[in-house]
Image (cartoon, rainbow, N blue to C red; front, side):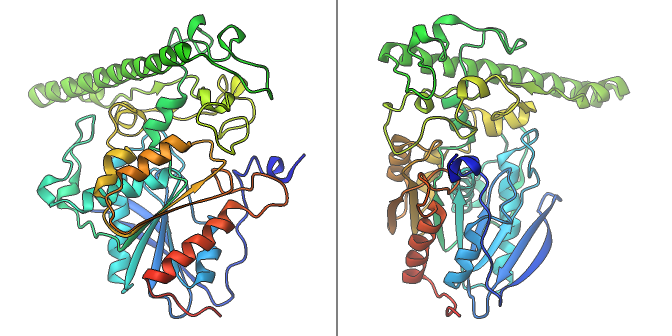
Length: 415
């Protein structure tokens, strides 16, 4: 077994030691809409530039880049959203208010330069934030895709001084649109299959792992169209649930009858089966790269697809439309990227199993920054090495990031 396999294909990487002179403090922040979020600030003497790491649904407190950024002379801010470790209720428009609370805190604490660093889903989170922060308050998004009002117009959204994107994927919804299984025949039955759309049927081109599968273009065209159709059907279910809740609220407002109030509060949880079925993970001839066979979740998508693990498995209707729908979500990197106009560094990973080369090209082409630098380093999506004995992608990326920061911002002297 290789070191990459022992580390879950690079998913679980230990962070190195932080500098001995680093000082860490924990901060509770209140957003403009009253939510409480937590952030961790680690500084080194003389640091006036702070690099911010966030992910919409993961805790990045111990991200492996933290000690490497501190060694480079930057302070590091790692922050949670209100939906940390929780796919169920993640609403991206609310997460922007969480980002804003951290940005205000850092600005008020006197940092000369604030640079966002979005890894994976954190990339689209920050792209969405920077797009909205760059707009006049009246032009910001006023409601979620599900119709819930969001206080972006009332929030102080400081614009960062720079943006770094490390292995960003196109957005949670776009990512799911690429890997949702369109062969599900009955949303209530995880085993139901439409045979002619089954990615894992040898009759359609699937090969037993670890051999790469091979799919005909006609099958792939039908498959991709059917993926969009399935997402559209789930969108319709989500909107129907939200419409029924709105009707109940209106009935309660009119009658005051508690039964309507209960009906408006009753949760409608959407279950989405089989979301690890991207053809690019099992047919390596599609958009070729250095990536190994398999998905972010493991080496056997044909089995994992039927298990508990997967994107957007359980979600509220509001969260589905805001985060997981590739057709309805505002958190789409390419949609947001023209609004990212601050100096920008885009670091791609050559073995990425979530952001494929064509995706990265589209994201880079959409960015609005005049000062735009792009580079690639060898590694897997979560920062692990592709082969045993190689440097990690995090180490390689940190060197590129440190060089980029040094040219543009003041960093503390290295001890």
